[in-house]
Image 1 (cartoon, rainbow, N blue to C red):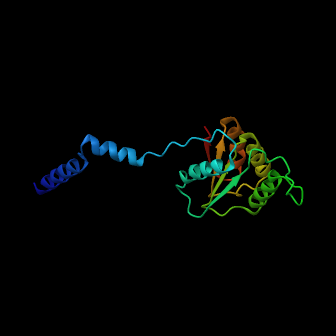
Image 2: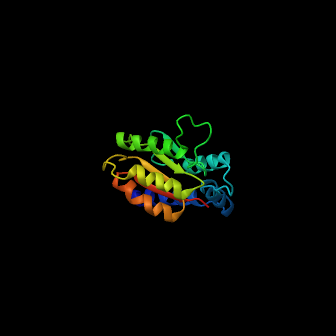
Image 3: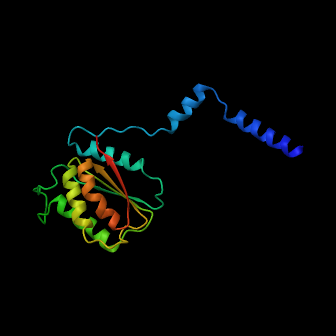
Amino acid sequence: MSRHFIALSMLSLALALTACSGEEAESIKKESAPVVLVAPTTNDDGAWKTYLGQVAGQHQEGVTDRTIGYYLPADSAVATAGDVDNKTQYDRQLEGVAMAIQRTVTPGNLLAFGSPDSSKMADLMVTAFTGAAPDAVKGSKVLFIGKPADSARVQPLVEAAGGKYVSVEAK
């Protein structure tokens, strides 16, 4: 008899705790819903960097080390007058990513890639990840922020390198 009483008491308590007003439930639901982010409509570097940082911030689940962001401005294929070695930003970024992939990335990291020029960023990632070791990014998350068609080119290469691939459409 006492087991049934305890079980009924526990069930009653559980129901009482979960029974909250519709307003409370709606408030809880709103607080836990992720903020919908909107990509900048211009090539403003500051706005894009802020947007990409916010998107990366929404994908921190499972990240136990650090977030490493890779950003290409829209005009990254153009060398500027200030380039001492006449390398474009694209070339410098590609070199940095390719070296990181070759050395392998520590598990628990988030590598976040984004640009106003989704196709150019996908090109960079395809080049950097082509031929990568099967464990080059094992245990890490790779986030691509761009167009779905570009994401489709990148995903198989990242997964072949052992990474958990996440794609967010920049819209």
